[in-house]
Image 1 (cartoon, rainbow, N blue to C red):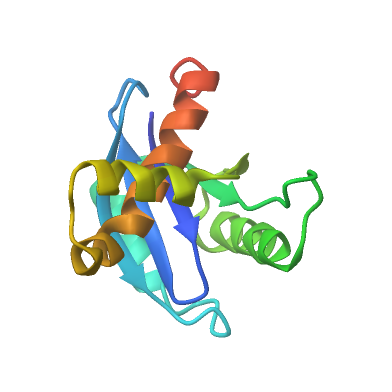
Image 2 (spheres, one colour; image 1 turned 135 degrees about the vertical axis):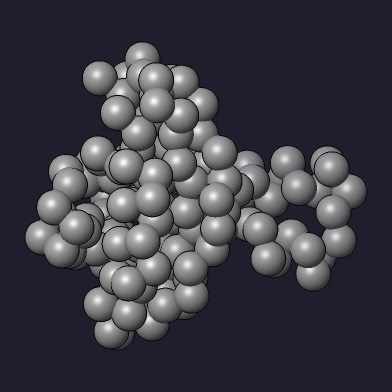
Length: 141
């Protein structure tokens, strides 16, 4: 079963997809959306889910460093529920603490310019969220 990884921000959603065996995550795109209009990314995500035959969503859950869930985490929980209701696939939340920082570090080590990093950081964070889930769950089972 293929899975989609989502790094949900207030203006963009980083998107990654897994291979059919659930071993690797590949960055796909960054979808622009408006958090206050929760349906604003539905059309694009519906297309991606159908095109890649996605069976599960893994959504980054930004926890505070002490493990509590703040405003951003609550927004991710709401979005996970939305994905299940609108797209009809199960959604799991994955602790994404430090994924954006780790993604930034990888891109810096690749000597990518700030302008280019800004364009791909959300997609790279989605890859790290999905790959973390796949690694921990041995192919997402």
